[in-house]
Length: 366
Image (cartoon, rainbow, N blue to C red; front, top):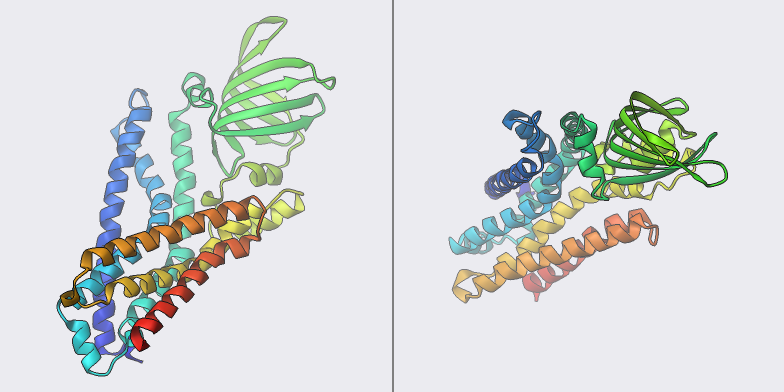
């Protein structure tokens, strides 16, 4: 096959170089923006110096850039194909009797390999670093006053639990250790009759058997003055599996551990759609990258002398953005359980690939 011949390797090498340039450039821009954002958030903390903020930014970076990869492939492929077209290299390839499928095949194969590596290697690294980033953020928010700045905004996660003492509602500004460690905690406790008992504010909470162990806690009760405790226990009937199923973010779980998380959520009687969706999205990523190459070929193979290059570039970017919007909409529907997670993850990539191939067939064979 030409995809592995001399000309195919030349096309593939140029495509891979373009993708790397686009990806690295965007990574640098994202790192700069995130550094400014984290400086704004934590710049006034005594324990958040330049080195710790940079560490947080670098640890968060892979999880952001995972979402960027399809666009890097699209822009890299468009840039490569437009360069070939401008230099009339496609004209030479066609004059040698080669079809569009042959001289774009190497780029599609490389995109497929990039997708497989991103799922099996880069994603586990990204998930591990995201979990480490949560721990660094936890170390910055290591005091109750600092941590509650986050939880009082109303953001973060909420959790309702039942225990031997009654019912409680937990709010956390951030999580770590797959949801088993909470930062910036506020707990509203009620007795078995539903009457409000106390509000507890703490810097952190760690799940142990039968209890949340709160550190640097302040307890507010309607019948007494606020009391402060170095350690305070709040009973719970939640298990680690239940907490992981409710609070662990899918992007902190690697491709290899997602099946276990799905099974654990099912055993605990919890909804597993968001983990199933993440797993299927990762499985579909190699095909999505190939689809981006096909879209780039559709909008970039017109010869420069025919004009309309600007419209081609805008059309390619618009097509990629439309595919992204469709993918996000499908993921939202899949996460809410309206459609099957597998269908939500695979439909955009399959639909985009089929439509791109149909257009290329029309352009190639009329």
